[in-house]
Image (cartoon, rainbow, N blue to C red; front, side, top):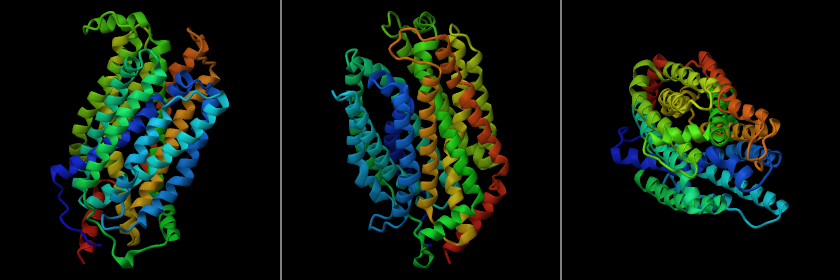
Length: 470
């Protein structure tokens, strides 16, 4: 396996991170607004939206992602294996993001078909773009400290995208649509899509693939899959990824219902007035933005601590401890009354800080799993490993988003009602606290069986470095 310098310039780290900013303009919109958009804007009943989100997501995760991983690993161009896919999919992904959040004047049946087609194509293009992008981090450098560094850059960019979507998007939808949320979503997504295309092109032109497998290390798809099944750290990381993204999609997709239906509008208005926001037409929208903004700012602070903690104590231990602490501040939301807006904001800030520590570590651990596979089997199949994790991400997104609409439907939520029933309110409250907290805690428990600790990280890095120069 050939390599060149393993140290990366700041320019390349920033350039790489912009690709995740672009992808997360789409991903964060799906996590935050897909369920709400389908039920309260597009006009689908929860019992109709749930199977669309679930079965389309299942197809993209289980069928398309592994195929895409195998294709990417076998792509050979003068630009490398993974970078070309970032270039080829940039514009199609942007166009489909606009179409998926547009509301056509169709019949109910026509709108269902349109939703299925656009959501399917959006997830497929997202996979064709983001899976090679994720795998690229495994071949930019073999230096694990540099991987920790690039992961930190990358996930600061994720936080920027999250801030744009979760803090600014809903007020801008209201403003740009003139009160018509369907028009507002379409206009805002157009601006986000154009920005995303530009950012992806920058990523393509500023990055370089350095780890190139030797010809004798070529393997069949059967061998790659066999390596995966025998790779216990990979199995654990796959399950952990699913659980993490179920939590993110479930609570993230439920927050807007929490602000619109559970928290006291008067209490939100009074809270906002303390910060100079007076006579707000839609206090829930601005409160929702500030809530997400506080969490994101402190996630970024947490990310800043991530690399030094992971370098000193190892990724596994830092990830597990921070995940458990962050979960406590999810669970506490169930017990906070609707008038205590300050406590809600405080819980989100503390959750954001501790969860932020885990964000870069997750993907750095997945890159370590690719190294572990090469170390064990003398074969490297970066994209198939990352594609499997993208399967986990998509399954988590699918299950979590479907749980949002599924739980709402089970507890009797009706978008046409001005005031929801007590049962529906309880379902919303459970969806932002107890239910997502359970998945995080199960994920933390799995790490007791994950064997790549700090000592093994160092051993794998040193032994692979020797092999790669032979």
